[in-house]
Length: 268
Length: 236
Image (spheres, rainbow over the protein chains, first blue to last red):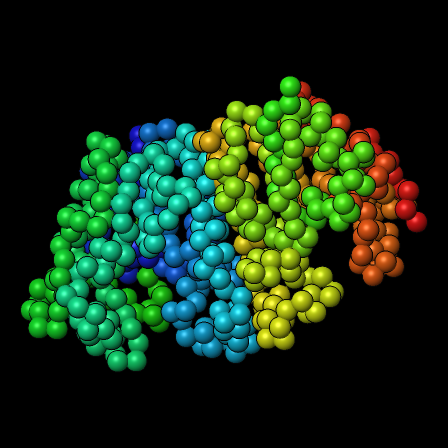
């Protein structure tokens, strides 16, 4: 009996509204099937900070058995879990702050971003986060791999001390666009309404790359191969003149909008 | 024959403000260096800093630490201190009454808003846990003779995975004040305008006791108890 536990941000957030919108090809679910796990436990949420991921890992540890696998997706180090009951608002630079938290808190966040945020502090803190995960992994004898959603560390602890990992999921996601103009077109015009920027890709990746990622991850976990996120994925796929039917076939069956929050995360 | 060095990373519990000649006969750092048989000590501590700053100092100096012969002390500070201003590192204690004297008006306003609206979360506790586990991992991975000492909060946190630590340096500091409680200490510190002239916040009498307790903890693996065995209520 084994479980696959997936923790992290939107790169692993596997949503559905009803059965027909379940994106069964989502990379984490494919990985679960490849690893022949009995249960798939996905706790990813979009917009959360690494602090929340640590809390999730702390909460599940007592339920993890020796045959289990844990995939932990680290997010942008600069995210801040400002509001206890709203962990998904940590990605504050992507939110319409006044509408979501009110004028006073929005102003506090703005002043924080201008006067108090520092890259040096953020990198230092992220390094400590990695140290926490590595020590926890060893202490509880976990089979855990960290996949960087965003930046890898320069110096300090390795991103994943049990496995070799190169690049980040952001590399895979960004490389799917032919150009930055195509990126803007996709988010603002194809998915969004010219006012709101959206991404209808499941976990910010096209369908074909879910298969590649699941394969690569399986080989890393089972055969100890390096997980190279900078190479081997489909690239330069999305562009303005792409065949719309093909593009739609590569996207999430559930078109997620910022106001559409009645979805559930897949976990069974 | 003396060998190796004692490294001390921390906040004001590790700083001193008088010349070494006036301290060497009684200050815990000099006597601990002697007891451990080290040649010298390197002190990388600053008043008012946050844990993130202390951690960075240790990382930046780690390639100079001799794993075979050196001893490293990491004194943790209050978990709610914030390293908001790299370059103005000593203003980590954003709750101190005179905080606004040390930053710009805009920075003071941003900190005020932060304290009022953005602290309803468990980030400080979580990041303190990150720090402690990162230090434990570093100690094992790099095989550093490292001892983490609580300057303040210790309840519920693991500072040493092998032996027990009870209380913190703040207990020794506070218990020197008549009344032995936070209220009495607060009243006293207010009466001296926040200027604690004790070296490392301890009276001279308690330095040799601390040095011996550290020595027994480091060399003989004894539990470290900051709540008993010190001289108390000597300040009114």
